Length: 155
Image (cartoon, rainbow, N blue to C red; front, side):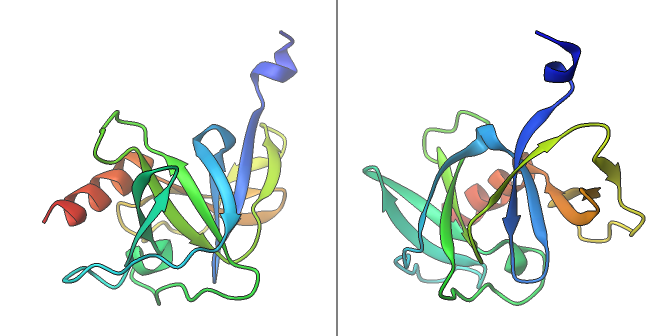
């Protein structure tokens, strides 16, 4: 493997209502047309409900709502993004996100990624705001996302 291959990560830019998430491509299980989740009672607004994906109940969330903003509203171009969770929790193997459009593939390396100059006051859910290819993106803490969804779903 060449040095260029080692220092590059294949990622996806996930379009949200007012920003974008940057995620490694490996955590994305599937991108599909938007599916309306089945709502659950007594859940925060950001917990949109559950959907059945490949025979598994998957919680669907709005990252914008989790960050304290308005809960994402599906539009004509919205998609459901199913993420693999990282901690081996059999009760929460995947999490669904609402996106505003199809994610974009991007190769991230030292030449096109740098920490953003904006302050990260978005709470524990965002590790770092970055600039990738001269555009702002947010890198979420996937462990924290999983923790919050699991905790909310378990109550």
